[in-house]
Length: 249
Length: 191
View 1: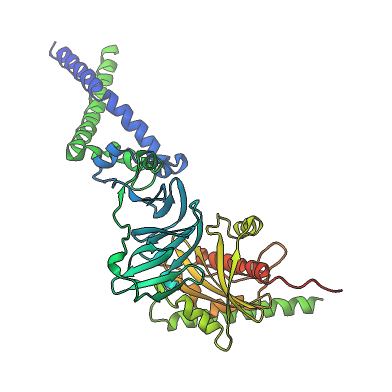
View 2: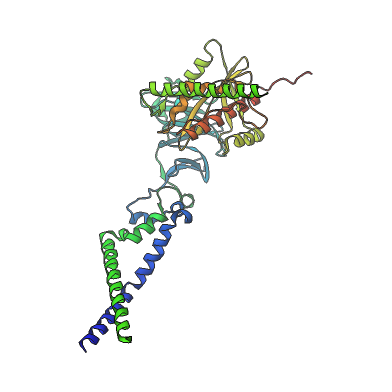
């Protein structure tokens, strides 16, 4: 009689434990399978960059700011690409500092390179520090179709034909009004850059879900408990099978 | 026939051993293996190349056919509508950029009468693979010309650990030769 009660209790607890870890067990099996075959499934190549996921991981997606000149927006994305409206035109690995227009040429100054663009926003050429751009370039400004480069120490006149920089002692620095304040770019432009900037691979997310780390220490504790329950489940299952064998004998 | 084959193989082997020896010596002699940095500015490069001459500045506009061919050589989109160079008496000097692994390598190439006269790394921004800048490696490009398929006519020995940088220099060397052919077209043969 006593033995029959303990068998029933064992089966009841086996069922309860089985039901309580049922969903998590299936999830762990599927996520474990996915992680085992991650290279084949290319999970590490799939980037996730939704705002809530990035904020969950403590990564901030900075607002994209740029300059508006001549009805065109100039800004850079997280991959250090310079954009003229929706078109990527050049690399801009240093901070974007200033823009100006002189004659038919648009000028975009990144801290280490001055880009010359056509009115349509096509890159003509780039003038870098290696070519002679001063390392302390701060801003550019166009006055009477002449482009001036403002550095920490002086104002220089830029010749777009020869790419020469010459001192401009005659110009009053106060008369230059460089465009240096960046504004948030319109939502339509920001949307197209959704996939640039910080991102997290799907493999990382699945691994963190599988281990419970996705939910912090609490998640790890839950997965630990589930692991323990699976051990108990297998023991109660084994006992139930042994008891059944005895009963049939 | 067997003798000439044997001699060719021996010559090839000797040249490779000499190259490897020179490269190893240069690497061992180098105090710093991380070659990240700017080694020469553009104006200084041109001044060195045309030390005894008065070069003229030139601009090559990349029309659609030149751009198309340049993109084939580099295997990527070419940005910019024009490329500047310096030239004097059939010699041109170009400063071009190409990505090694992640960062652009700035390379100066001098072409004299349709053949590469010298190749020099002016700025290297990757943390590894900077061995390509050593003279023993760069000397391989001397005398190279462009084949009909827009490749270098010389086989360039690679460097372990700098494969991508080597590919980048090969592409830029071929591109400079192509740009030279467009900027300094050869007069039609009268034969």
